[in-house]
Image (cartoon, rainbow, N blue to C red; front, side):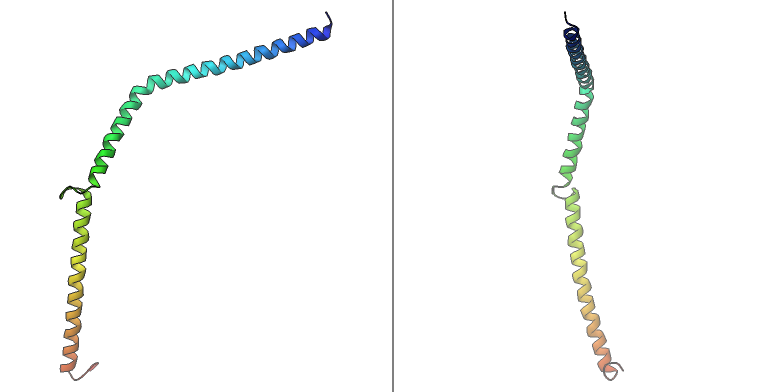
Length: 111
């Protein structure tokens, strides 16, 4: 056989062995990853279930339920603030009227 053919055959064999080694390495990594995933799956499932419960609790707090949810508390607080602002505006008007009457009694504005 011609030495060029032997060199070509050896080169092809090395390339095939290299590709097979790469594929074997990839397959082993895939199997290890799959094993790790399946081993951790029960923990992941429990963690997801716990997160779902926490999300349900948070969601319940954002819906009105007649008094004890966070949303109900925020609405009551907003109503109280609006009421206080209205009362403050009435007090301000009465104070301005009182100042105007006192100024009239004392002889005019700024006296």
